[in-house]
Amino acid sequence: MAPSKKKTKKKYFTLAEANATLPLVRAIVQDIAQLAPELRERHERLQRLAPEEGQRLSSANREEVEHIQAELEREHERMNEYFAELGKLGIELKDPFTGLLDFPALRDNREVYLCWKLGEPEVAHWHELNAGFAGRQQISKQLA
Image (cartoon, rainbow, N blue to C red; front, side, top):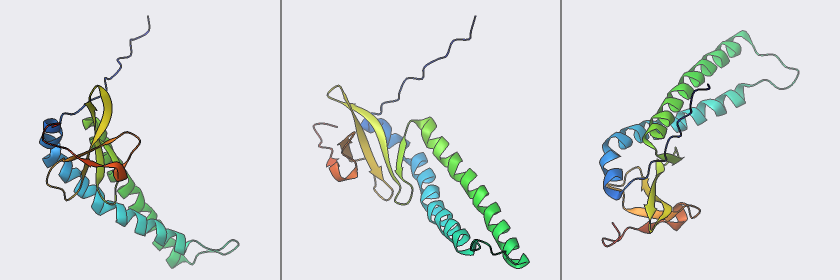
């Protein structure tokens, strides 16, 4: 008999639950927002150092490229660990550079997102699944 696969039920957050996770989430997202531009800069640096077709790197350049590639791999691993931490919490990161993320939630028996961005003191916005950041709306006290 094959082992049964448990379906993990999707986590839906209340406003209070989303706000209660912010100390941990804020720490993770700060790390992500700090690391994201470093990853981009290293990747761009590698692109600039890449030899033109038919050209070879000098040994000094080859050593620099290998060093940058090793750093990039380590940083990618760290970033993946941060993403995994958020995933385990049931949170969806939307923009690693600004620290924008969504908490799945239910409002009037339909799925929506509670929306938070690094630097905001609390989760105070929501939007429809397909609306994105541009469709953010303030959570009114009656709906909270």
